[in-house]
Structures are given as structure tokens and as C-alpha cells.
Length: 257
Image (cartoon, rainbow, N blue to C red; front, side, top):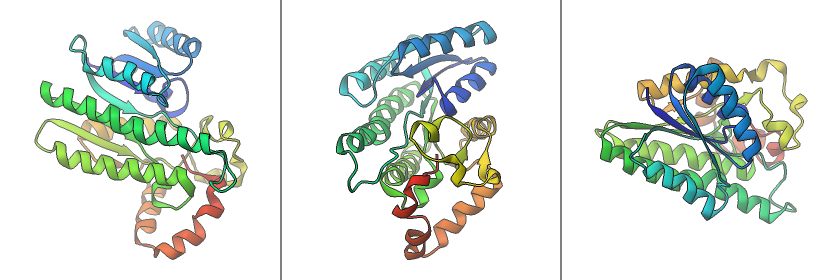
């Protein structure tokens, strides 16, 4: 029984990962911006699974918020054996004409935070001789769907590089690249989920299960569904000019998770 720290833990993929980790008898540290929602989720998991659940209220878009989480990652008492960098959001806008503050916040939460938390966690885990990091990227990482896709492409490349650096240390890094997942993600971003056919969606339970299985295997990249695995292969081998035309900025309002 170990301890997992999950960011963005009160909804979507993060919440499902927390539940599945608790079912596997892991203690949890849940991170999100809203204390009330954190406490509610923590109470539900404690009651149902009988594991210890800590809550950390932190805005990962701020230096102070990241500091709260890095302080916990450095602690030797009940050390974190799995870091899940899941916090993120859809921008629901284009760069040109969009709000710059929202773009900068997205960069802080989905890139800067992943960098800082992964570095601190990896150093602590290497010193202890074991651990794992799971970074949530996206199928969008292989597209050119605006700045969200750029952030997720960074997460994917960063995680692959980190995995290589950690080789031989008994610490692993895994990038999760889901496609369209049935969560609150699109609604919160003001995106129209009806744009995509029903067959394109994947249940969040399946996504979380595939992610945790990949972590246990030490797998570097996981795409949870044969459909999206095939799509990822196709996108990697498609000429970029065609990717830009089909899955570029014009389609950014349909961003994949």
C-alpha cells in the first residue's frame, strides 16, 4: 500500500484515477483549487474505500500553489510513490482574439506545473529508489489544434524524455494520451460535445484503468483504446500540412482531452 498524489482530483480523469487507486488500497493526496469539493470527495473515498485521504487546496497556476504541492512531494513521512499530473482545462478560445490571461494560466497549469512537480517528485523518488509519475497528455498532442495541443505535445515529449533520463533508477514516467472522454471537460470549456459522433467517446473508467495498468508495467506512452492507438499512429505518419488542414487551428474548438 503506497501513497498517490493526484492533481485535478475532483472531477474527470483525476477523480476516476483517485477512486481506482483507492480501490487498489493506495492512500491518497488529492489536489485541487476548491476546498469544499476536495473535502466532499475525500469523505466519499474514505467512507467507501477505507484509505487515508489528505487534501491540499492549491492553485497550480501560481507559484504559491505549486509550492504547497512540492512541499508535500518532498516529505519523507508517508512519501508519495505515484505522482499524477492531471490538472488542466480546455481554453475554449483561439489565440488570436482570445484572452491572453487565460492562455498564460493554461501554460502555467499544464506545462510549468508539470515541469516543477515532476522534477521535485522524480528527485525524491530516485533518492528513495522507487516511484512513478503519470502525466496526462492528450491525443491533441499529435494535432495542431491551437495552444492546448501545443501544451499537451510538450507534456508528451517531456514525459518521454524524463522516462529516458530515469532509466535504471526504478522510477518510471508515463504519458497518458486519451481522446474524447466522457467527463465535464468539454462542458467546462464551453465546447460542443455534439460535434463528435458517439462512437468517438471513451468511458473514463476505461481510460483510468488503462493508465494505471501502463504505470504498473512501466510503459512510457499509453493511448487507451485501439481506435485512438490507430489514430495516433496515423497522425504521426501523416504529412504535417495535411494534419494542419484536418486537425489544425480551425478545429481547435473541438479539442480532444
